[in-house]
Length: 389
Image (cartoon, rainbow, N blue to C red; front, side):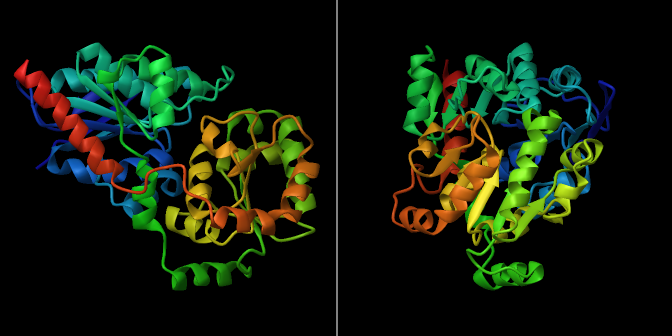
C-alpha cells in the first residue's frame, strides 16, 4: 500500500513509516492548482509507479481540484497539504516546510514542479533545501512584468532547477540569455498539447455542451476572470464586467466564474453587470474545452487559456497588461493592456470571423505532442548521469 500523509498548519503526519535511505527511482510530483493537475497528468503517467503525488491544497474545493484530478486521471495524492486560501507568503512557507520535512523523511530521486504557482515555488525550495534534483516543467516563460507574483515564482524556480524543461526553443533562448547553462536546459514541448489530446471531447459531446447552454458554434463568447490584479481592484473588475456586459448585447457571454471573482463582484456592488451574463459554476476541463473549441471569441486572464485557445485556433483577448507567452502576440491573441475594455472587446467581436479564418491556416508555435514522455526521458538521463558520476 502506498504511503499517504496529511499536513495541517505546516505539520507533517506520516501515515506510514519514513523511508530509510534514498529511493533512486521515486519522483515527488508537486501540484496545487487546477492547471497543474491538467499539465502534469501526462508526466505522472509517463513516470508510472515511480511518481509520488503531493497536493498542496492551493486549490482545494471539488470543482477546482478533486473533480479535475479525477477527470485528467491523476491518482489520489499520497501527500496532502492544507494551505487553503491563505496569503501567498503563508502558502509558500507552509508548503515549503511540509514538503521539506516529507523529503527528509522520504528521500526522493527528484522533485517535479510545473509552471509558476505558489505550489511550484514551494516544491522547488523544498527540493533545493534537501539537495534533491529539481525538474521545472514549463521553464523559460517570461512576462517581464515584476508586478505579477507568478513572474517572481517562475524566475526563482528556473534559477535553482537542475533541469529546465522549456516548451519551445524561444523559451530555451531566454534561459540561456539569463545565464542558465545549456546542460540544464531541454526543449521538451508543451504538456498541455498532450492533455488536450486526451481531454478534448468528440464532436457529439461538444454539440451536447452547446445545446446545454443554448448557443451555436462561433455565436457566443467564453470569458473567465480570476487573477488577483483584476479581482482585487474594484475599479478594474468593474471595467472588465462592464465590457463583458456590453458585449452581451451582441452575443451570449458564457462566464464560468471563479468563487473569488464572484465574491469580489458582489462585494463591489457589481451584481447588475453579472446579471447580464450567463453565469456558470466552474466547469470541468472537458466541459470548458467543449465550449472553448466552439467559441466565437475567448476573453480571459488565464495563462493556460492562452495556450488552449492557440491549440484550438480560437481568437482570444487577454485581460492583462503583459503575457509570459509573447509568441502568441504574433496574431494568436491580443492584450487588453490599459485600453478601455468596452472598446477592445466590441472591436474583437466585430473582427472575430476574419480572425478565426486567419488562425485556421496558421502553423502552431508549439511542437505537437510527446512532451510528457520527453520530460520523463530527460529526467531519467539526468538521474543516470548523477549515478555514473
